[in-house]
Structures are given as structure tokens and as C-alpha cells.
Image (tube, rainbow, N blue to C red; front, side, top):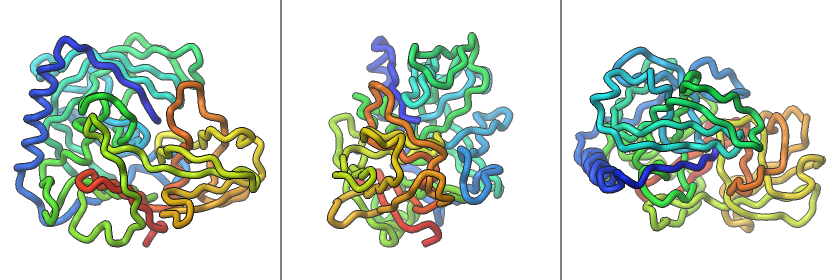
Length: 336
């Protein structure tokens, strides 16, 4: 679910100070021997619904949706123990562009432990987490129920490239998978920041040589310190392709695309990276039974900045790598 967020300006200096401390901690921690693989909770094969993982802030375990289309963790404020004693980064909101849901609350710095169905765990350094106190809906919301509390909120955003102006709002500091305590932000380290999303689970951390098995797309560094999204081209029924940013989003089951006529298409072809030599390419027809075929197709909502969002079914055909240290997105056929 691609999002927009807003942070109060009053504590901006405090945010940047805390951000520096978190980044330093991530760089200086000792490395484990190898990355950690977390299997999804009750995901099924092929993947047909949003993948979930367990997470805890020192209290009870909750199931979270692992969302590659948004950034940072958002959770009901009541799920965070000793909330009042945590460093408070001020009021914040987060809007999911694909649904119109707006989460309202404040950000705190807190470590989180994440567990897969296989029992494997990672623990992060303290990261900014949105403690949600209420939920509102945009006028054009498609799937939204307002609430006076943050009940039902448990989102684990691990995406990047959504153009926010600082490291808290764009998720660089809030991404749990690039701030695990056993990662070292240095090339050649046994475990460095990054992840590989598959249809069965997610590998947290990259080992030397992991990128060798992927077709890579070089990303562009933004002024905010975040990396841009890769580009993709989409052709509908054999017509000339349109191109723009792609966000592979495990938070939705439908494809969102900016190409006119896509909702009624007989065939859609997608390629990522250089059109002459794509890093990943596939085609489908609605209802064809292909595991990569989305549950539906609709034109992207107004204000939605992504050109194409293929939805979670993309993961049934390709494993997806993110290397934030070198600035690469990578793709390989599933099981490769």
C-alpha cells in the first residue's frame, strides 16, 4: 500500500538527532553469521493474500501485514508497552494511497522483534514507529472504516522510494528490515542491510554474493537519502507501452496502473528496468489462472504517484531484492 505521511515540524531537530543515533547504532553493531529467513504466517502457496509476520514491542505478539508498498511500522498505540516512557517524535499521519485510509497518531522510537512462522526472529535497533490513536478516511476512500482508536492497525511497511522529504517520513529510518541489530552497513560484512522477498517468506539481511543471483536495476539516490523506485513499462493489448515508477506491493491483491484501457484489457505485458533488456518481464490475461495474474485491475486513484503497482501476485513469479547500501532492486525467477 503506497502511502503519504506527515510529521509535525516542532520536533524536527529532535527527529534528526534521534535518526543519527539510530543510523550510528545500525552501523556499529556486531554481525551475525548469516541472514535470517522468516516464513510467512498462514500464507498459502501460491501467495493469494497479504503475507503476515509476528511482531512484538516487548509485550504480546501481534500479526502484522508485511507491506512492501509502504514504509515503516504502524500499530494500535495500545499494543506498545510503556508508551509514555518512550522517546516521542511528535504527531504524525500516514495515508495509504491505494485504499484512502489515514492513520493518525504520533511516532516513538522503540525496538521491535519480528518472528516468522518457522520460529526465526530478528530484533531491530530503536526505530520510528507510528503509534495509531485513530483512523480517518479520505472522501474518495475505497475500503476504509473510521475509528476513534487504532484498533485493527498492524502494518509492517518495508518499502522505499516514495519521495518523502526526510528519513523519518520516507521510511529510511523506520524500515525494520534494514535496521536489524545484527546488520553492519558495510560491503563485505557477513550480514548487511537489505532483504529478499519471496512467495514463502522473507530473507532479512544480505550476505556477500546474494546480489549475484539477481538481475539488477540501479536506483537513483534522492535528496532525502532514500532511493527512487525502479521504472517499468506496461503494454495493454499490444499497444505502445507506457512507462513509469513501479512499486511491487504485497499489501494489495489488485493491480493499479496508469494505462488507459487496462481495466478491460485482454492481455497486459509488464517489463522492469531497461525495455531493451528487462530485469524482469511477464504477461497475463485476466482470469487465465497464472499465479502472477492479479485478482483484478483498476486505474490508479487520483493523486497516486506510482505508474504501476502489480500487487502481491508478482511475488509468485519473481523473488524481489532490495539493496539499500548499493542502491539496487533485483529480480530472479521464484525459487532461483
